[in-house]
Image (cartoon, rainbow, N blue to C red; front, side):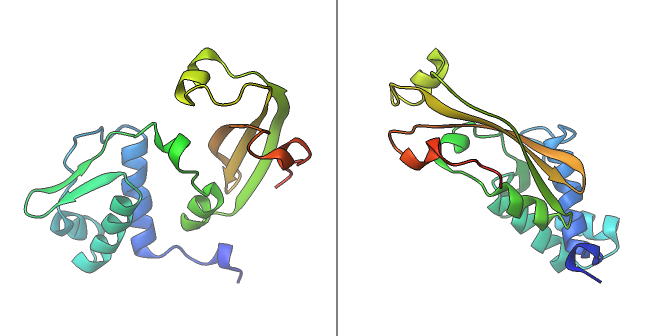
Length: 163
């Protein structure tokens, strides 16, 4: 049995279920998620199993945990894409699904006015532009559009981005 064939742990399933409710909008920003005790009853498991799943959601920035007040769904932070590059492969593998990647488009282009404002005017020449599809178990997981300034990362012009 390979690692991808292994059954998903209960805490992973709980985390995945809660994450799906958040990302789908079923639980919008500000929504108070059920207590650990309520979730433990829903999944017929220990509170510690639920706590592990909920802590992972908090570390991922999807919820805020407040002692005595409960946990609430956080609004997405759009700045994260500029400040921090998440490893999408790791996110997919954490769900227990096999990961696959496809480069859909690669080219060079100028920044749009909105991108120029977001980057505070960085990047005067053509940028390397990528459109990538990350798959989880054969299903699209994330469509990524990445712009790389070759003045900052010169090797980006020669990189094929096959992986």
